[in-house]
Length: 158
Length: 110
Image (cartoon, rainbow over all chains, first blue to last red; front, side, top):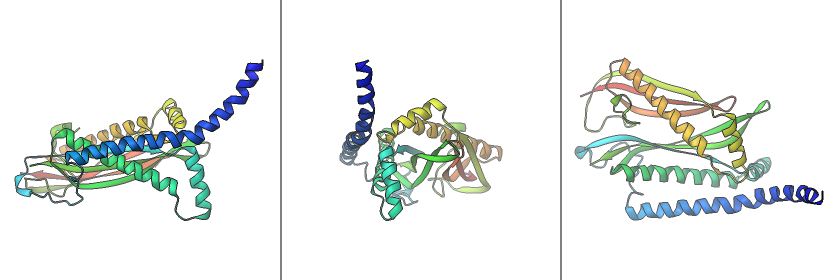
């Protein structure tokens, strides 16, 4: 009976600790891994091969082309959702969400760069970003579960 | 993905290295999909620490390919041999489902 009482005492506190400190450990870990991948691409020289222009740099020498699509769904932790809701009462910059969206966009862009490296093409032209909100139904209203970032562009080979 | 129906498509206004001789108008392909309840619960658990929801990423990837495939099928039905200026749009409909839309201009190229 004592252990049961102890469990009832520890488990809620543990849940609190995980949700308070979990994001502070987990998210920087993932961001660091992303940064290493980005630096590898910079060394490889493919990080600067993306352009939003619709004309390729060498239009007369194109061998092949294909559409590359990369996406990622990022979700804020519920502490971040609460923080965002709290800040939106006062208005102004909501740091947690802007950081999360920036992270998601970097991740999606990096995936496009990695697809480019894997496919052996030289350049991605006409790169476009799209953002969408994913919801789940909870009771009568729809709640935000995450944001989807989509990046796509035409890869060309010279 | 690009081999669906063997139809070339790109999101630029012209296909690199070929000329457009005829336009067949706008073609669209869309699909509405939702993940199952268990994956939704998993995503809810991931909300504790935040970060990527892999199940949703894969779901949207698959459905986007489906939308592209339908778009290409429509273009083929109109007698086109390529699709240019492809654009994507995503919207969430009620009940946790998402609609993926791909649209572009069906053309005949030489």
